[in-house]
Amino acid sequence: MTEPEGTTEPEGMTDPMTPLTRTHTWLPPLPPESLAGFSGEQLLREILEGRVPPPPIASTLGIELLEVGPGEVEFEGESGGHLLNGYGMLFGGYLASLLDCALGSAVLTLLPAGTGQTTVQMNVNIVRPAHSGTGPLRCVGRALHVGRSIATSEATVTGAGDGKLYAHGTTTCAVVGRG
Image 1: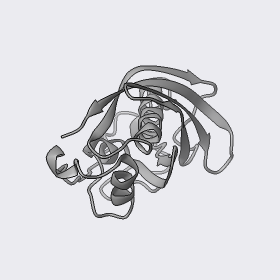
Image 2: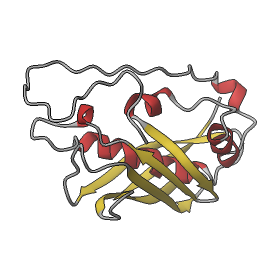
Image 3: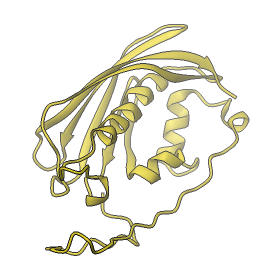
Image 4: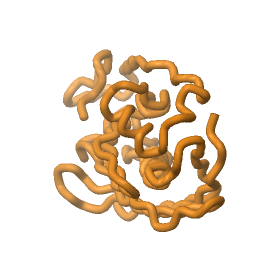
């Protein structure tokens, strides 16, 4: 994944007081009632194939859906300088958001039309810091249990280039009506 057009982050920046800019655009989400006929896996495939816009938060955070299968999804996330905390490391909340995308979507792939999921609990473990030079991050989520009212899943964040584990997590989701 590359920095979106409109980002300025000069190489070798030495003056920390020089402002940088980042601009992004997004598509508005479709009304929930228009999505009610899709199973979770169908909905994610429609997003992947560009027939349904991704959730606005995905473009805001630079997270892209790469693969969808029954009970498993793969996302890619940025590691640009705009995502750093005050210590020069990728903000932990960004890694949690990347995990949340994969955790919830893995569950969603196993849900029938008319149902969705919402996170009710999430556990995140960050095992090594990521930096702006880390490169793209891959996040793979796998559903563990999907019942009528509760579902669980697990996910890992690894470097797309180095294969190192950066974070992993688990979630409990409530299965809810959609639309």
